[in-house]
Image 1 (tube, rainbow, N blue to C red):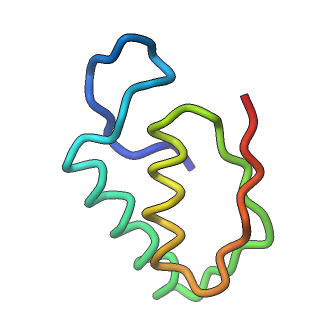
Image 2: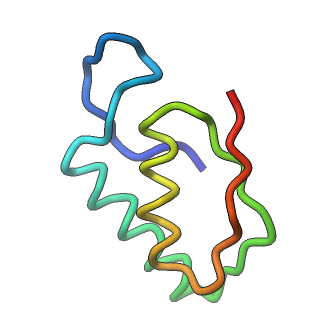
Image 3: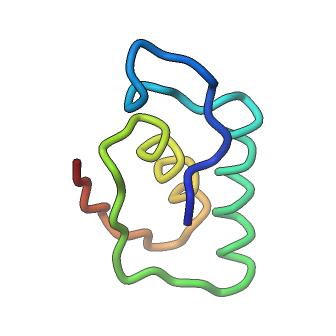
Length: 72
């Protein structure tokens, strides 16, 4: 899955944070995935701020979300 909507600017691309709409998207995605009965065995997450934020918000909606493996 791709990260949710991010802000358009930051000092560096990897420092871009989620936009308010992206925060809502990520939370809604987790709820929707749980409603569909999706259970994840693993999560590989980029070290970019926006991808880690997406995962954190998405994982709140999932039951038993795995600990993510964060990679550069």
